[in-house]
Length: 265
Image 1 (cartoon, rainbow, N blue to C red):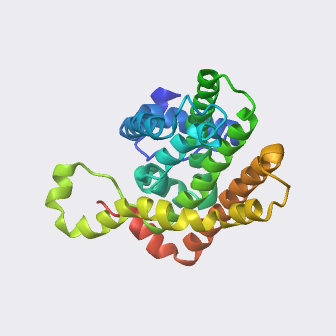
Image 2 (cartoon, rainbow, N blue to C red):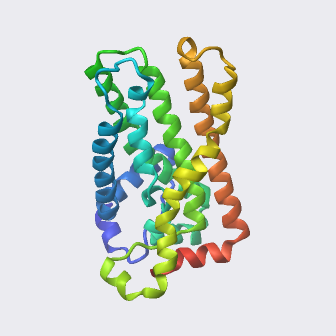
Image 3 (cartoon, helix red, strand yellow):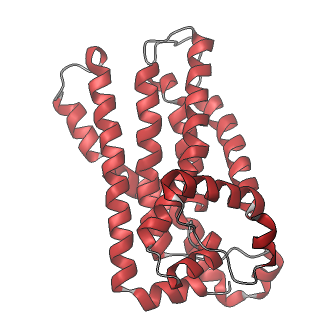
């Protein structure tokens, strides 16, 4: 099968192997044909572990909610990056070939989203478990697990929308330096994840803040599982909303979307 792909001059497309098969194929494609993206993800993850560990971890406060969120904070750090907000542009040839074959934007994004979640959710959960072992407190582990998953999918929903609004093809810095006409748009694409982190994400968290402030499920400590489940449900709802909005934009601005996706730089 690999040999056949290597000889096939046509651009690669997303397969139709069923949900699990599609995700496995996406992971294989990433490992073999998107090594630069994978290296970027690994570097971001390493930096996130160091930074979040330094700013959040305090062994003298073992019962602190802040410690339980270390894994969540690492996942958010990694996703507040163009790895998440440029999912289509970073794989533009395959995305375009799939769209021309009749595939849909939400399906392509969902496969990429779930593949990214397969990378990040287990890593975030492992970090949460390790932190729990280090502080020798297990009470907040279910809370941390649901927060990890909820945060990942919330960010994936936002990343899906930005991925259709501002897709760009990553190129070598030497080429970018020569293509000065692309600097403004490229700068905007790089700045949007940070802007989203400081402006959009607080707004998206307003429902959760309201539920906490109103104590809908009662005091937080005795009912932390209920609040965690609400956060998980909210994250999944935002993910579904993000895929729908991405699909809506891609349909209504089809020419503009495909033109931006096909840009050579």
